[in-house]
Length: 217
Image (cartoon, rainbow, N blue to C red; front, side, top):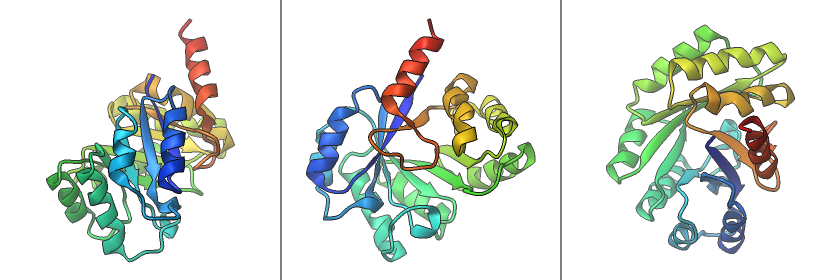
């Protein structure tokens, strides 16, 4: 089962150190919106052979970036030019379709993502969001909602069955089930934390890998 570990990219040295700790991960998402200095993206890229996802979220998207939109996107394009394989663009990014084409034109693949930190999404909502994001021409779609009850996990798992190769699961304590089972249902991968969670309910990388080993015995 593929796991993407999310890392807060604060400084170049600290980011590289954390990447080297993520041996159990299959790919790495670097949250550039947590940076405290200008990052050396080329040095970061060559520090690991694992596929890298660049993410630079605005505050209203659940991130830390307060820079102008053009600057926020520019950094993501720079990451692709430095060799990052993928960029995660939030559904609320300005002129999303144009930004998707800009990243793809520089050789990167785009994950168009939707996050709802308050609401559990049902089957109809998931399909509506999927169809809207698909129109942008992105390479993958990621839809993350909330879970108030354990039964709220089912729509996300069913989505993964209908749209294999994309990603959907629930956040929050009661969304753990869909986080773990998403890849079994067809999701491209799921997300884990390294030393501190970047999203509510993230499971530590080592714990998640051990869970998969137990399930596969």
